[in-house]
Each structure stands twice: as C-alpha cells, then as structure tokens.
Length: 201
Ligand code: GRF
Image 1 (cartoon, rainbow, N blue to C red):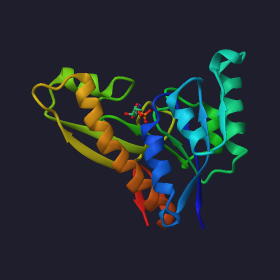
Image 2 (cartoon, helix red, strand yellow):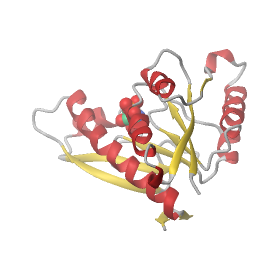
Image 3 (cartoon, rainbow, N blue to C red):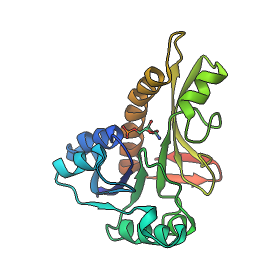
C-alpha cells in the first residue's frame, strides 16, 4: 500500500521538493496527493504545479475567525484522505479541529534540535545562544509549539563564521534528508506513538 501524503507549505518548498523527488520512486512507499498553503505566489505551490499535483490555498484573512480557517483547512486536507499530513515549512499553527482529525498523523519539521529553540526563529536563536551543535527535528504535531513527540533528529555543527542564513541553509540540507528518510520508513513500516516515544516499524 502506498501512503497518501498531504504536504503543507508557506515558502520555497525545498522540503516538499525532496519529498516529490523521493516519491517518484514507487519503492519509496508514499505519494504526495495534494499540497496546501496559507498564501499564494510561493515557490512551494509552483513546485507542486510543475509536478502536476493538486493544490489548495487557504488564507487566514479570508475567514471570519482562526477557528473557521482551521475548520476549512481540516476539510481541505481531509478531502484527499491522507495517511499523513506533513507540515514542511508551513508557518501556521493548526488548531483544535485540525488536530482532532489528524491526531498522531501530522508531522512537522523544525530547524533546531528540540526541545531547544522552539518557535519561528530556530537558527537565529541557536546562533545567538552560541551553541556549537544545532540541527533539525521531525515531530508528531501536538497542541504546543514544536513540542510534539520526536520522530527523528539530525545534528549540524555551527561554524564560527555562520550567519543565520548560512546556518539555516546547512540545517535545511540535513532537514530534507531526515524528512525523506523518516517519512519513507513510516510509510513502509508503520509507526507507533506511545506517550513521547515514537517507534517506526
Ligand atoms: C525549514 O527549515 C522549516 O523547518 C522552516 O522553514 C524552512 C522551510 O523551507 N520552518 P522550505 O520551504 O521547505 O524550503
């Protein structure tokens, strides 16, 4: 069985592209069935369109409330009956209705080694703190900010002359490899979330 992935993006979509490239091989075990975004005009959507994958865009400002946006996002994703929803650089927190529907089946990537540096500025916060090692984390989304059970992590060394941009670019190289490896194994082997522990296979 091939796992169905809905991928959510807000930006350049290089993580999405890594998944699109991986899923071109049927042996990978998963396929991207739709790509959703919270804004238009982004390269992430263009990547999906070039790959012939359906897209949807739901902007918070087009809804009366955050809850209404969340319900619409839930329905838009559910329409594609995903086995996994992958938030890949999606810059919005999803709400209760989304989490209820996709509990335990929504993954997010974060460009820091959780539980350090949660939030929107992981690479900048790591650089500012002066850590010598940072990295990226794939986790099962819960109601917190980058707090969910950890699926995979990959470490990246901080260089003395790193800028936020150079560090984030190097993290993203590790992040794409981590994402492709973990999602493929989850799709092929299944996974169990028990408390904070995630076991693949
Ligand atoms: C990734 O580092 C993700 O973790 C962060 O934003 C970046 C998105 O990159 N939240 P891309 O859009 O996949 O290129």
